[in-house]
Image (cartoon, rainbow, N blue to C red; front, side, top):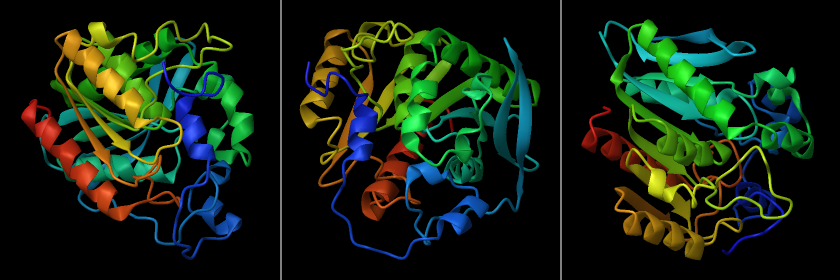
Length: 297
């Protein structure tokens, strides 16, 4: 299979510079004060901010094996039984960008929940200044524990009045990989959307916490997944996306893909230099349409 055999492909794409137009960036202090993880790099001053007016939003604690998992949620006020949408984080933890995505989903009518499933390491990833220090933590997360945590987050939302019969999941970067993994696990999931989630895991050294890559899980998919990828992603080549598409088709699974010309990895991350507005806006519309098509929204 194609791809860097020693580095997770989502990280390979993220660490290589993408062509961009220089814009104004926040100072590190301002970015930290705004809730962004410094390890993610420079933060654009024009990062999107979605306010919480008309929403119930805030922090929560979800009971899971090993303790209470922090989460951020948002839901529209006055709406009974809104659909539940799980949000898979990038490697940078539960920071402002992910919380803003949660609020955006709530504005679409969802009870959105972003669980901090890396909490057991006892370190706040949003406080890290070097992404290399984050990697051993996130790479050690077992897939079996991940899907159990996501199940718990969905059940918690259901207990708070969300409609888990209309369960969806969206994820970004490493969270995009989580979408593929969860879709192979959960028979309750109605639809998933993976933004540039890695499809092939590193071959050397193999990670015992990840027994199967998304590509290997293709025959096990239990929900339709939409994959949104950038043509210029230097960690996830187009050929690899086409390989995944073929694997899903051969297994008789329902899936969709869209590849954005000239878009790098993390093209939706409006707080980073990789942001590409046209691709990001279209991808969000594709996500919304996918969730509507399969009865989530």
